[in-house]
Image (cartoon, rainbow, N blue to C red):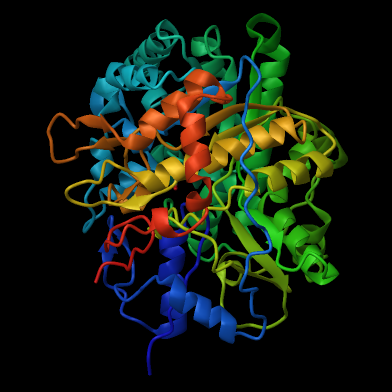
Length: 586
Ligand code: NOJ
């Protein structure tokens, strides 16, 4: 019997590779032996949109053959002055220097040093030593901002103040921040991009322990004290969903705590939301008057589009998906201080006496509600959502959101997509940006500015590298134009756009086999040279001119390419390793 082939996709989410593994193991009892980027992946996964389309057509709820979300017309226009054009990175993915100059071990270092893995993050892009090169790359692109994360164990090796501050770590971030400012770039700093000090995991069980609220607050306070004179934009957490569900629910990424889908992951999120709020209050009470900055959170924002917008069941299903995914964090912070109704009903409906979804007290709700000055949204892609009580086909939701009942996800076969790396299987759905911003604006009462803190498209590593990344140029043409449309047509207060990512780096468990950079990083070269891809030039033109002004050559170029960029052609360069059709490690 031929093995069923399944295409899952989760936009930018970390967990995809592991989810593939679980799904395929569960569904096909297949060989789980392949190793991609040192996270186990099934060897027999083959990702082929044609087959998947067929699979969808054969299913009881066939998706429409023609996308009912046609491409938007190109519009020329520019962003308001002061808008931030940037690239994003994260400490574990670029810094290296994993145990250099007093840095403590993180849960990702710990994971990567287990037998059978190659700890590529030990060196990564060596930004610990090459930070000035990185800043220069950003300056060459005419960036006005750089989003990077601070490594908690580089500042506090065992995670605590009692364990001592690592002065070399403070010095490193001071140098990076000063270098950015010298090159007229705004530092946009994430405090937690998943690299928890291993000591906090070992001693206290990491985010399962309520005392983490205090430890995180100590760390955040240290950041404000040391860097807040120059850093005015702070994100507490990056994509909490993406480290909580895989790490503490499924147990497939560090700290690999298994069997937590029904209860532990909700308890962890409760701690994380309180830690976020605590850090915001600390800033608000003790630093804001003097430093005058903003503190927010970055949320993964995979847009759930109702498959049939005139079917109220699909519309409700899509809303339920949004509530479980984005709303889990957004509703407490930007809404009414509490979890979304759909979560409370579906999770605690069967456990009222011993609620699995923790319950906020009234005082906690008041403390959490409104505890943010902005929201960062990582907006890579979308899913089509439909109402269904069937078990099959197994989908992303069945695997990672078992408490979300009656809701299934699929995709539209007309959507172009990037390399289905297992980590960043990005369908190119530019209008997800505008839809998500609309939803957020209408849904939540605490009105804040938006930053698009990440978006980008992956390709599989290939030799020689294809520096002429037309698919990435297309991607940024479409997505930047969508952001401009949100500002101009919908009046959304979008204040920045950050491309993921400055240079190819360590895509978590996939290592450097999956590449999203505007610069190619040569990991075989001891100097780890970074070379601009064609997309870097385009992104520079966009940033320099503030978008797509009438008459600019890149505006004309974008107009000329507009229709083509909405087809699969640019994303499928007819190689096994192109952006369009990654067939898995055969
Ligand atoms: C989201 C994460 O924040 C980032 O670390 C990751 O590399 C990108 N998505 C791409 O998968």
